[in-house]
Image (tube, rainbow, N blue to C red; front, side, top):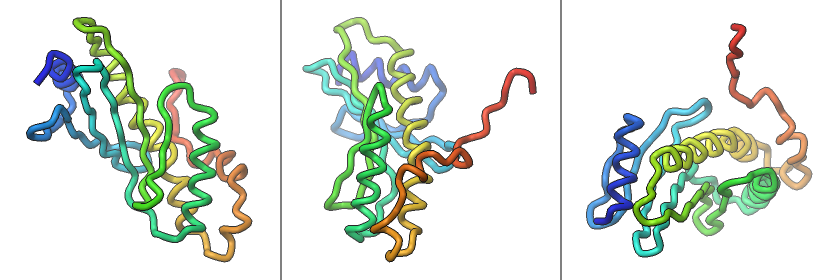
Length: 166
């Protein structure tokens, strides 16, 4: 395929991550168990541009337009706080995506940068998963007045972080 695609596969091997190649495409697919959910992602190489894009997706949302509107607000507010990558919504399919991309200089493919892109994708997708789930479970009559700010302020949805003192 390309030197960049080989570098992506090598980064996955170096991290001891299981993956599968998509035949006839410069794509690897992988799944990761995270705190809230299993995160399915793919890393796609656009060799001519020197770009790698890592994309995850959450399971399909129910098709209700009110749910989609609230989830879209959640994603806009979360994106405002992100430095790298961002959430997208495929409105027609009810799909929430996270995408992070990087342009690499030919011959200077860094496995640590590729690994950090995967780590960011998994952690950000896992962080948003409970928000999307709670919106989907909200009664239909509550969606019009759903308090997204209060949802995003909840600390009980964050993973427990072990301190060095423990």
